[in-house]
Length: 146
Image 1 (cartoon, rainbow, N blue to C red):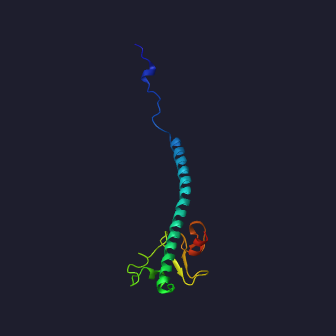
Image 2: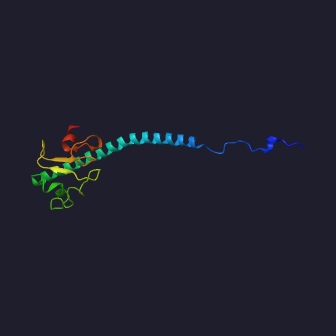
Image 3: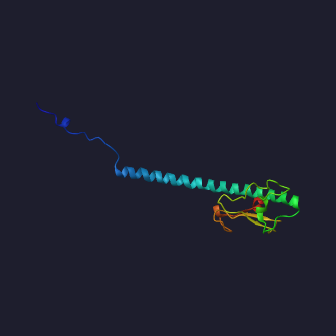
């Protein structure tokens, strides 16, 4: 009646991962997530800039229609807000609502413009003149140059 000493001992099977193994996996996942988010961010910025360019073009079309009807561009005091107002010539207004850029800032309107009859400007993510990347300015002049 000798018993086998190996059958009475619990076997040494791995029940889970060690803390070090888990930390290595978490660090690798974090690095991958960081790399993906950095590449996606540039697409988001370009997408917002494309939307701003399209909205500037739409505002310019409405300004040109306003000029064709009233033989003048809106004054700086009237701004592009006048394009939303309903009147006899345009019962629904030239624009359905007051446009805001993708960063929720108002577009800047200047009459006369620096090189054109008017300037419609989006100051980018920071909402201030100048900048690079997401903060770069867009205007009807820079859109026409592209």
